Length: 243
Image 1 (tube, helix red, strand yellow):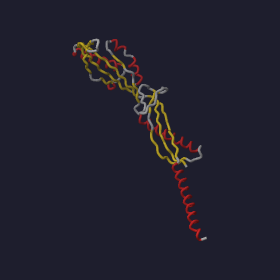
Image 2 (tube, helix red, strand yellow):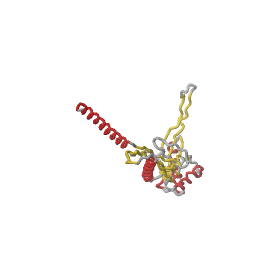
Image 3 (cartoon, rainbow, N blue to C red):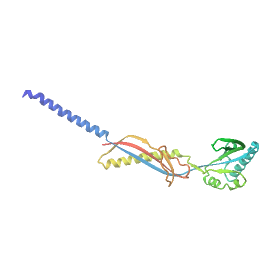
Image 4 (cartoon, rainbow, N blue to C red):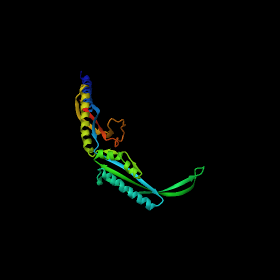
């Protein structure tokens, strides 16, 4: 009988070790069990700042004459804007850019055969930044008076911005995080588990698109400036422990 005691003790040790390892494995498995979710949030808002720009130009073989004409155009443009309710501090007129223009001819092989100077082209840009969106929209659409006065004005579509974007981003981040928690809790509850602590979380891409538009989201984050009515959205990736 005594000869069997070491074998019995060895067998018991194996059983105990297996039990301990099994318990440790189950405990580790329970600790490592997680659920990953993506929470999201959206917010519709209206831009509170409009930026509109237009350019005008003059061309003449006499540089001084072209410069004088462009200066006169700039004064008329500024007078037109202020007479239509746009404040002087909302108007930015750029420096003048100058280019030399040439009439060039080419042979059948595509080589230039002659180049004749035809004048100086002077260009200037006016930009309006204002919170009076409706008024600037109206002014940007109705520039007939300037064109009829002989000013070669090229108007650009207005761009729309929001000056309190940081506040929207923080609120959306909180809502998206809450949404992620609710999604994780729903998954845990419906799978017979209980939601544990947050293991890790990261903010996704912050996007701004035009309301009711078909704009595509981008990997770097869309930033719409063409629409006055916008939608901001954000996502949060979160991983929770479950037990």
